Image (cartoon, rainbow, N blue to C red; front, side, top):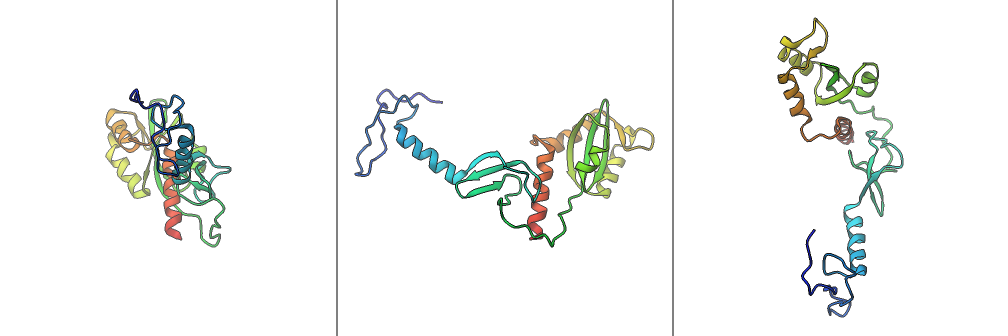
Length: 192
C-alpha cells in the first residue's frame, strides 16, 4: 500500500466531457473517487473473474475451485465451462500417477490411475506428492530408493534423500489433489 500525495484528495480520471472528475476520493489510497473505483472493480471482475467455490464439483476433473465471470463459471483447474456438455461417449480421461504417502516415519511409493479410490484404502497420515507416471516410473523410484526399502513392500524409510525427492515434486504445489485435477482436465481437453 502507498500513501497518496497530499494533493490527491480529488479524483483525477476524466469525466464524460474529458475534464478531471474532481469528486472527493473518500480517503482512498489512490486518486480515484468511489464511483471510479467501483467501475475499475466491475471491469476487473468481468475481465479477470472472481475465484470462488464452484456450485458443484467440476464434471470434467472434479475440482471444487472455479472462476466466476458475468457470463458464467469456469473450472479453475481445467477451464471447463460449467454447463458445457461433456462428450459422454468418451471414456473418462486416464492419468497414471506415482503417489507418495507418509505414515509415521515411513513413505509409501505406489502407482494408480484412480488415486482417490486407491488412497482411501491405504492407511496414511498425509499425501505428500503426486508424480505423473505409471508402473515404469514407480519401478524406477523403487530402484532409486532401494536402500531405504522396508522388506519387499512399497514402504520406505523417510530418509533425507527420499524426502528431498518428494520435496522437489511438491515444490510450488499447495495441494497435490489440485495438481491431479489439473492433469485430469488437461487429459480431458486432449480427448476433445
